[in-house]
Image 1 (cartoon, one colour):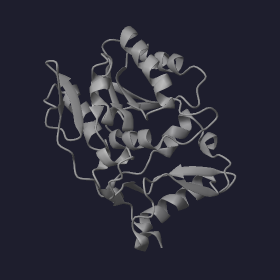
Image 2 (tube, one colour; image 1 turned 90 degrees about the vertical axis):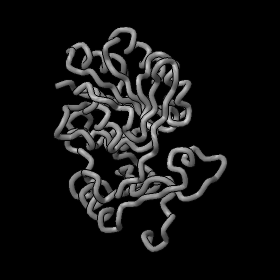
Image 3 (cartoon, one colour; image 1 turned 60 degrees about the horizontal axis):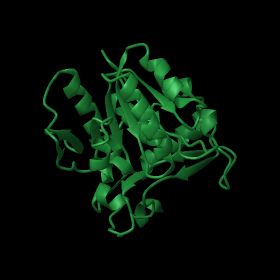
Image 4 (tube, helix red, strand yellow; image 1 turned 60 degrees about the vertical axis):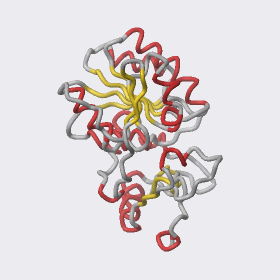
Length: 256
C-alpha cells in the first residue's frame, strides 16, 4: 500500500507552530494509510528530507498545505523539484492559496489536485479513489484539471467538529518532538497552538476565509475543548493555549 507524505512549507523564520491543518489530514487517514510529516519550519533542508522518503519508492501521494505569502517561497520550488525527479507521485495541495487560486496552481503543471476547504473527508476519499482506480469526480471539496479544463465539485457541509478523530500527537512527536512546538509567548512559556472551531459566519470583503467557508462556522463543544486542552496540558506540559480559530468569539455562550 502506498504511503502519504505531508509537507508543511516554512512559514516564518524561527517560528514553530504545530502543523494543525496537516495533523487533521493525518488523523483522517490514520489506521488506513501510513503517513509522515515533513515540517519546513523544523528542517534546514526540507527538500532533502522529502527526497529521503521518496527515494524509498514507498510514497506515491504528497500533500502540501499552503498559505499565501511566505509559504509559497518554499512550496513552489520544492513542488517543482519533486515533480521533476518523481513524476509518478500524485501531488495534492490544500489551504487558502490553492483553494482561492486553483487555476494558477493546477495550470502550473506540478499539482494534480486541490482540496477546496476542509479535507477531513475529501483527502482520504481521494486517496481511496486513486488507490483503487475509482472515479473521484463526485468527491466534494475537490478541484481538478481534465481535458484542459478545471472542474470544481460541490462544497461539503461543515462537519460536526466533535466527531473528528483526535490529532495524532504521539506520531508527530516521533518525527518532531512536541517540545519544539511549545513556544514562549506572552501567554506562557510552553504555548501550544490549537483550533477549537473552523470558519466564520460573516462575509467581510477583505478576508480569505469567506470563499473557503462561505459564511459557515462549526465549533467543538466546550466539553471537547476541555478534554483536548487537559490532554495537551497533562501529556505535553503546555502551560498556555494559542487559539488559531478563524473567529473564536462567534458564540458568546460557547465562549463563556
